Image 1 (cartoon, rainbow, N blue to C red):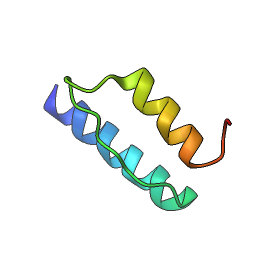
Image 2 (image 1 turned 30 degrees about the horizontal axis):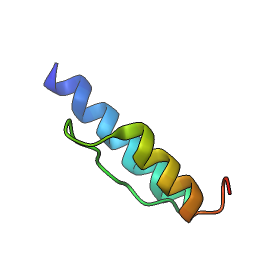
Image 3 (image 1 turned 180 degrees about the vertical axis):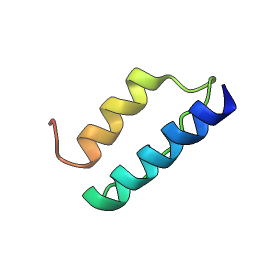
Image 4 (image 1 turned 90 degrees about the vertical axis):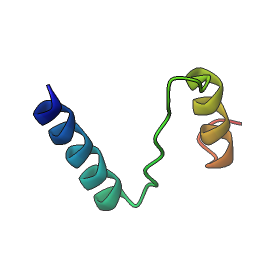
Length: 47
């Protein structure tokens, strides 16, 4: 299981590097939907 998690994290970090996007880890106590909306608004994806 840890190997798969490490592969996923490596893939995410690589994608962020290639696309110029920040890597932001969202833990269990974060309201992910709300955080995603804030990021989208901040980055001008939705307004």
